[in-house]
Amino acid sequence: QVQVVESGGGSVQAGGSLRLSCVVSGYTYSSYCMGWSRQAPGKEREGVATSYIGASSTYYADSVKGRFTIGRDRTKNSLYLQMNSLKPEDTAMYYCAAVSDRSCVDAFHTNNFKYWGQGTQVTVSS
Image (cartoon, rainbow, N blue to C red):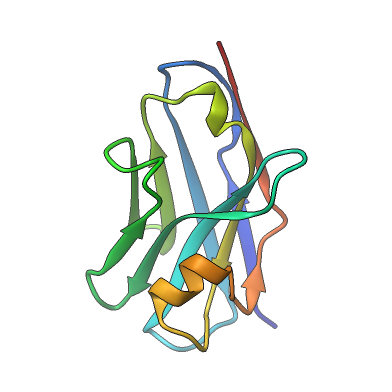
């Protein structure tokens, strides 16, 4: 059984930083797409960033480019999202997702992932 577990959310003032982590267990393949999406109250879920595990390709939403970094922590076998220069509009529930039968770019745009975590809340105050 595949499980996706996020951690690292919290509250921070505008301009601050947070680092989210995601661990996938129970999936035996070494190459697959993973990503982060977010959903603010009253809004649709949107892709934030994706990374193809096993390759070096990453993809970011325009709203987070230059501020967020997605990457793999090999020592912890986890995916992270380093979020710097946070803004109040970044406030949302953040979800980690893994594995898609589409390309990683398509998965980013459509949120078409097979496995999802429960989400971790990020709140940025002005």
